[in-house]
Amino acid sequence: MKDLFRGELVRLTSEEPELRAKHEARWQRDTEFHRLADADPAELNSEKKIRGWGEKFAEDGFKPGRYPFSIRALADDKLIGFMGLWVDLIHSEAWVGIGIGEREYWGKGYGTDAMKLCLQFAFMELGMQRVSLGLHEYNTRALKSYEKAGFKLEGHTRQDVLREGKRTNTLWMGVLRDEWLQLQNGERQ
Amino acid sequence: MFDIATQLFESQDIHFGPIDYEKDPEVESKWTHNAEFMRLYDFEPARPMSAAIVKKQYEKLEKKIDEDKNLYHFMIRAKADDRLIGKAVIQRIEWANGNCSVRVGVGSADDRRKGYGTQALKMLLRFAFAELNMFRVSANVAEYSEGAIALLKKLGFTEEVRRRQSLEREGRRWDLLVFGLLKDEWANQAKA
Image (spheres, rainbow over the protein chains, first blue to last red):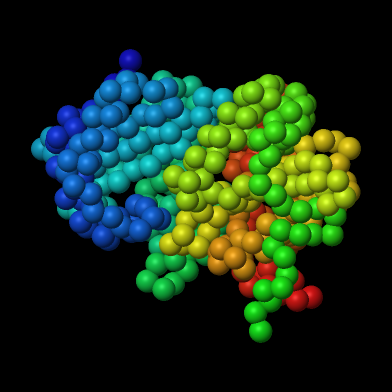
């Protein structure tokens, strides 16, 4: 059987709250990273507060709708980013969010590899029918990465984000279970 | 001149009002026993709710409005007799981006196709653009909600996204449509 949590460049992990908080507090100070990953205003939270989120998650146990992961590079085992799935069990749809906080790992296939693992997890472990995501139109690197992982563009919401006084669009993508299975067959042949 | 004389919560046949904890729970409880309404109004599983449960939901809702500050909720009432007809909601407000999502539901089948939904959505849009100063309003609707889609198009919304096979109902998958309306589009239309 395939290793669900190990790809070609990265592996998916669950990190201790202290370590996660230390990294995420640092990544939050990189506003370019924030503006690529998020539509909300940038914020700076204390390590203590971020650790609290992680501890709360550990206390709440494994809620069926929420699957957070950390991403480590296989080569040096460095913690480079995070990923999360929000699962709608009623309609078998999962939403995914991903961020590679370590800048020197941008544009080198780490995010794409993590996203491929994420899709494998959503379809082969969670039994989803569909995985969805949204991204800023100006994040062209992300668009290419998501297309490589198998996502298709399904439209854009016009001018819904205001940044630096300019309005930009949000792109919305999705991949269906059958499409993803076909991709896997293609890769095996 | 500012048009401050126009009442935000008054329309031809309906008005918006707050929750009435005495009378509304029983009416809304009846709606929840109608699966058709539930499936048109929400993507959550349809389930009948007693008046007691509905009352609790109201309390939770008002608490959420206070805490999250990104939600407005209005009861739609008939002007003639103040009878509860439906609900009109502005949700998922992103203040920094000036965008939000709207939702209108008319509870009883007898009250549909009478223009109440149109009047409610028009009032809701005026509230979103002229009172909350939103730049953009979105609406999510299932592809089988033909009445809602017709209404959104009538009021100038553009279909922007088709999330393929996002919903599971009646043993098959359905697309979910995202519609959008920008402030300029709304203003030009209001002038015409």
